[in-house]
Structures are given as C-alpha cells and as structure tokens.
Image 1 (cartoon, helix red, strand yellow):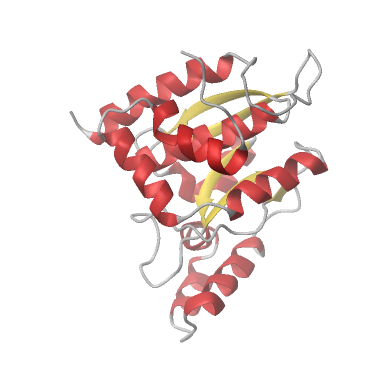
Image 2 (image 1 turned 135 degrees about the horizontal axis):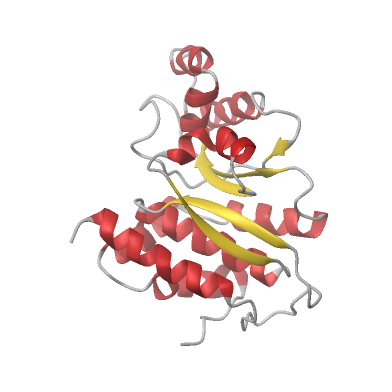
Length: 221
C-alpha cells in the first residue's frame, strides 16, 4: 500500500476523532459548551502532515476549540498563505523555506546564495518568510524541527511553522501553539510519520509524544 493511501486512511481517522470534542487531556478544558470551530488544513498524502495535523488538533482541542481537519491537495502546504486566503481553513502547518520559495522565489534564491549557515540561516529564512505575510496572517516562533523535505530549495532550512489567520486564537492559545511548536524535534516528527506510513493508527503514532510534551492523555478507544 502506498504512502498516499496510508496517509489518506489516517486522515479519515483524524477527522473522525477531531469531530469528537470531549477528550481526556489530563488538563482542564478551557472552552465553553459552544466551542469555537476551527479548521486545520493538511496534505493527506503526506504522513508528516497527518502527524502534525493530529498534534495541533489535539492542542487546540485541549484549549477549548472544536477542531476539524480538512484534506488539501498534495503539496498545498507550500502555498499556505493562498490556502488561508481562499479556503475555509484557519491553520496550515508548513515550513519556512518552502513557504518563502512560494511567496517570494527571488528572495528565496538570494537567501540560498547568501553564504549564511546554521542558526543564522534558519533565522534569516524565518524572518524573510514572515516578511511576506499579509497583515491578517501570522505564525509563532519557528520549530527547531525541520520538515517539508520535498517542497523547498535544498539550500534553505525548512523549520516547521503553523500559519494561521490573525484573530482566530486568543493569546493563551497562541502561547500554547508556540510552546508545542518549539518543543518539536525533527527525529520525533519523522518517527511519527514513519509509524503512520507503516500502518499504525495516528493517535498511537503521536500519543506518547503528546503525553510527554503536552500532558495530553491518549485518545480513548
């Protein structure tokens, strides 16, 4: 079975689980009974995207939002800004180099040829990416984790970032999104994606990570 089929199967599981709002998180649920609905868009052909979609959906559920996960066309995360502006989507998980290359290819080429390396290059890519945002779109600090291996120039870092419509989330939720983004590691996200590709249920593939880093208990069967 190919990765597309496996990831698509996982997406069905994500969507079904996200519709169920009452989850045991191990932390107080902050939302009122009428919870604000939010939609996360993911490329369901990508196991990495499926894993990230599950992580952010559980975080937002914990913060009191009614979360849905919507399938996007393949590689749509590279065009996250366009997705937010044209679709009924509130959050897309993408990577700095891929998004910069989509938003401003000339700036991406210039940065790739700049001679910057390491953390300085990662910060420059993040700053340049955020600089392309329209006023109604924002993100948080970049993750140290890298993803989107097939989407952007090899010369640019691909730090994972969630991109969302400004005003969708309150300050506490933005802080929580920032925290969970910052504690990600490349190897952890890659491992979760590999487990999903291997046929493991998505909730199990990221369950231990969510418990360790977010204090969110595994979903009940």
